[in-house]
Length: 294
Image 1 (cartoon, rainbow, N blue to C red):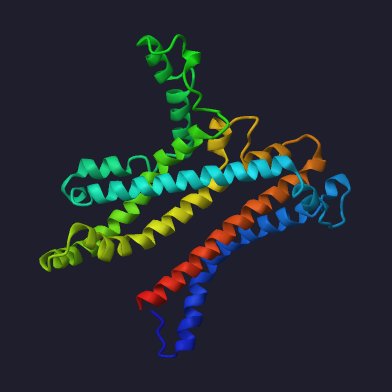
Image 2: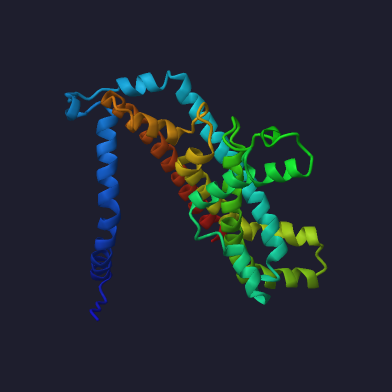
């Protein structure tokens, strides 16, 4: 293997080894952002539009349905992330001492991680829809007069079905991230504090919570960014009259009238910008946290 004592030579060698993987990641993403950006500025030669302008963004930022979809997407992502994070913390604290002792418990925690969201969305739809299993069970038990009288939890105005699907999928994801930290680092410190006479609340405040905070925040930001830009779950479980932002972009993109294409790309740029801001905030927070730890 090539080896040099020169730091500069080692850096060049490392850069050369990373270059292929970096190109594979950056070239498609960069090309996609370039095409999306220029079309969002009105550059669509297919329909004779070759001049760049901000007219699409001006129209978008005064559109009532755009702000309605934006607030709906932010609300669904915020509630999904907060509820998932709280439930994941409780689940991790409860299960951390038993995970290593039971392979079945490890399987139950992680079984839905490889499943795609569309599978969970279809399961929620068949379970909680007004013609789903629970509505039929309630009708059979005499709780409701007809299956249609079951509460509207799917394709509703507040996105209850969407939030439930995200919680079902993301709670294990966040919990697994926290449990891995708790098992590796926290237990020895907690034993020492217990020997020194610290109470349960003092052990949680001084050791457990500070250690679980980094994986909790990082996984929560990932969950928020994903749920904000996700398409398939709102498409299956969302209401037609209250579309999420990705659905609004999809409807504009698939419109037979190609003059709507810049609007779709502008919405995609807004989604990308918000996701990039979240990543930037996470990186700044991680840098600040690393400095404090050191």
